[in-house]
Image (cartoon, rainbow, N blue to C red; front, side):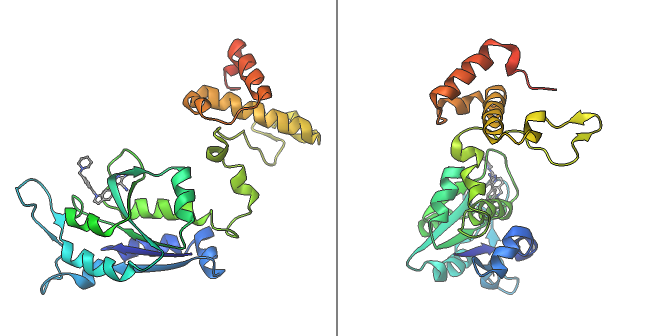
Length: 245
Ligand code: JEK
């Protein structure tokens, strides 16, 4: 997979893309990145990339010419051009999986109050990472890259995403590692029992409990068996819906 990013702050991308799992995916040849500085296409002696909004109002808008010059060479057959935008389609696990199906993504990051409207004619989709206002598209692009790259075959163990909470529609079960008792807090004995069947049933029940408690909205669309429905009915009836704490 190839991912190009268009930005006036390439240095915001470079550290994160060379680090951790993403960095390893690059070293392993699974993903290739290109980071492109819009300012090389900036206008005049000052390489200007922004200007005042027509019609007035606060702030600046990114001019179309430098953005067109940066984006046009990336619009090749098979490329999906994505504008990071607070008014875009919300990034979900489902959208990340769809984007991971493209072998070439080009992510466009604006700054200021956003981009000249005509830039939207060059993009295939507009994506937002959530309902809060950031200062530009670079952090959203990194979030999108992180969700997509971990879905590229070989980047992480395959089993790690089959268990993704948002894939199953439930929140995750509680996880523990050593030591068995920490600050007087024990690991639930079932996890030390070696009974894999019991462990699986405990994890499913705890995932259901946590989802009921924190995100009951997810239960409307989760893939639930008859046994899950029975467990949920019991959790709702008893005070078992209270988290253990
Ligand atoms: C791309 C520039 C900054 C700041 C004005 C007024 C309500 C804001 C743009 N989930 C996400 N949050 N923010 C972004 C994002 C922000 C960006 C750019 C993405 C380019 N900015 C900015 C204020 C305003 N608006 C009406 C919303 C616009 C984002 C994503 N993805």
